[in-house]
Length: 87
Image (cartoon, rainbow, N blue to C red; front, top):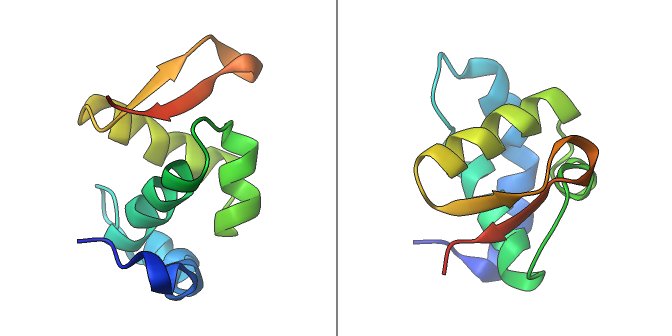
């Protein structure tokens, strides 16, 4: 369950968890992305970067994993790609 009142605690641990991850999506990073999409109906990867404190490549990897898990959708291509919560 995502604790929407304490999203900042997820952001603080994102970089640490990303470095420790041996594959797969660390929980706090996924929760941060989902929390952002809950407040914003659609977002680009650059917005996730600003919000999470992670790099664009890492955010791209985690976003793709959430798309594969069928949690979010990706529309358009490359620099115009927009992510949305799955309806």
